[in-house]
Image (cartoon, rainbow, N blue to C red; front, side, top):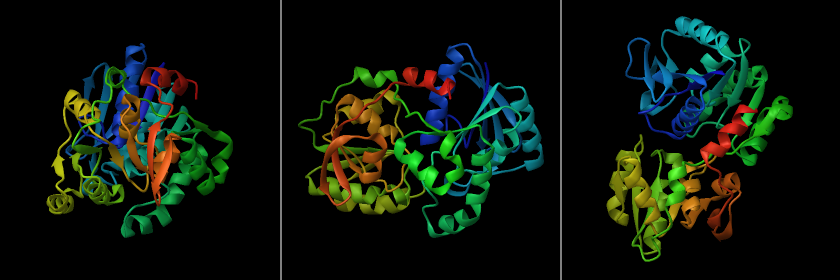
Length: 330
């Protein structure tokens, strides 16, 4: 098959959506499919192409203040390019309702080929400005929801959220949870006597990493924070108070060792469509302390330990190799 994927950015940029798109694109390419990723690129002045692990990547100039919004430049050219790529593809997978680039390009692509919209939907914005903008942006997302042939939710909780805000999508929502890399299954929890807990992901206020620092400190642990993002300067000022350590995104093997060696994985984010980090931790057997949103998204088994906070130890987690086949059947 000829497959088009549209993403806010692409590797080496790091983020939850980018991780999902890369994992799926590379596996589809290995299966012999012809895969093109159309992705925003804040550092680009003009469109450029490259190939990464058998995946054709078309990087399009965007403006992404604070790593958000992903506003496309050269919009008329982008519309024509997206239409052309879609016309040459058997299916287009459009990722993220929270990036202007993907919705704009997705609307251009939809109607030219079968379109699958994966919104990774949080329900709205996470700052006063973004919440206000969503009053208008919700209409644009609604157009893509209406135009898409299928809406792919990564959890049943996300599916309910999408159906509540976009009732017209109810009949075409299909749930296929995200997967984890196979290398995760070769690791087992080794942190029973560890002196630290771990958080991994983007550093945004709505992720509530400061609360994770405080919680780890109350448990007599330091929090190892693996990630980067616009909330990092604020968190660096708070880290000393709780004995937390903030590091950037780590090489894969170092990251896996850090997660497997932690007493707990912690993610108290108030808004997630899934949480690949916690899925990976649970697949290793690492006990995880999570928000209600994440416990519901992963349908994880555990018990409440505080208001809106759960200690979970088990969830049904699949590998990406298992998930890709389901995505092709959407």
